[in-house]
Length: 166
Image (cartoon, rainbow, N blue to C red; front, side, top):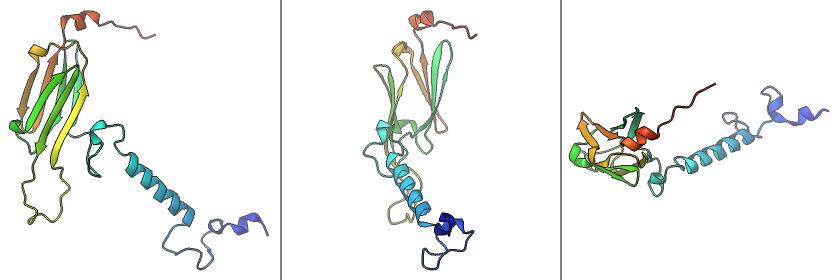
């Protein structure tokens, strides 16, 4: 008898009856899958400070943003569907742009059977650096998209250095 005969999953599907249910994978693979799922659930959004203390499944990086940068400015667009400009607050302090607000549910608890939508308070912090002309920062809101334009200071423009790639 070889060692291979002792390993049930190496026999091409001829498993010993009662070893594990036929609809279930072998117990070691099932255990590994469960442990992986446990770690995925625990460490989901672990790098986001905003997700600490939030309910399970909360998107710690909401709202989704798109960041672009030119020589003269930084532009951040945040998707906040279902909100109005009165629901959103924008702050710039110590080189960090903060977007915060609250999204309220439109349906009452009695009417709602299931919801995959995010409702509640949110806060997103985006480091943008200290070399921003704070007096000229502009924020606009249109069709559920918040656009924040942060012009760079003259010092930031002068400090920019191109590095040759070899």
